[in-house]
Image (cartoon, rainbow, N blue to C red; front, side, top):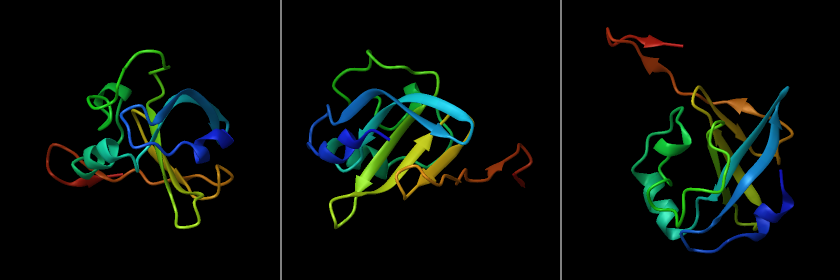
Length: 124
């Protein structure tokens, strides 16, 4: 992950980096990465259910200052800082899955919540 992410901590609708590239296993993704501690983004995240999503359906899409200038096909990501002022939680959301890392991308966990099929039963 780009080390500049840990330095960006503005409470604005521009608290993001465009076209950030990182690897999850064998796959390289390029996304817009949001600082979820910025006031507007924190509020948007409160009303969103963690789930696979497109960039356009992200909780941040409607509140960010501009929607162009970034790669969109791989989804989006967001992070928060811990008390030690280091990134403590980084979530990558793709159209098909959700991943989390707490160690700067060394280890990724698939945290995709189960979904319900039309009969109301959970499917994995």
